[in-house]
Length: 113
Image (cartoon, rainbow, N blue to C red):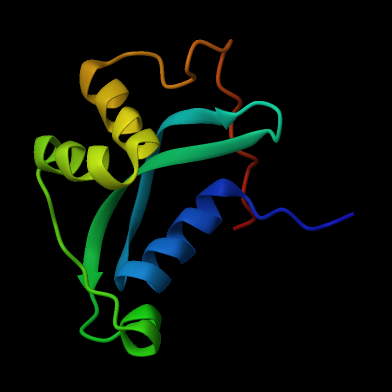
């Protein structure tokens, strides 16, 4: 059986690796069911930024850049490149159900201290 990391721990690690951002994880905004056949779920959290790194793993290895957007602008950019992600922000902005019509969103597993 493969190890599946807790969504909250994965979120903190991914934002650090991909954007060079450290912060305090806040509440879970929603769980989006992208593909029910493959059971693909995306967990979206609030993150309060506490530190921005000058150089981070992806900036050094693949030249990734970090950019900040207002929600409305992020939606416009995502609609062109990642329309499913744009839908996440639209639903959150409108206060709609982030479970795409499914029943209650599952809670992420408790992480170890």
